[in-house]
Length: 66
Image (tube, rainbow, N blue to C red):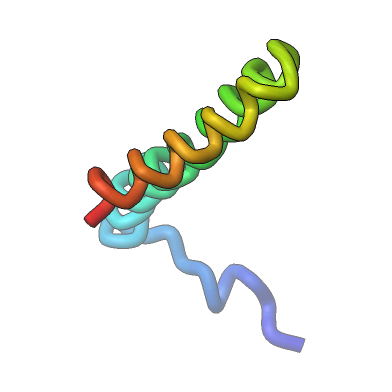
């Protein structure tokens, strides 16, 4: 059995990479989480608000994610 300490060494370079990778992973995850929360709040407004909001999100992602 290989010990985890031999595989995942936390030297200076690894700590620097993690210092960059963790905030960027959180930034990538923030947009879908914000859209999910926004959709949940809009869903409580009524049956006509949610489909229009979903169409807006699709257009927004088409324009600004490219």
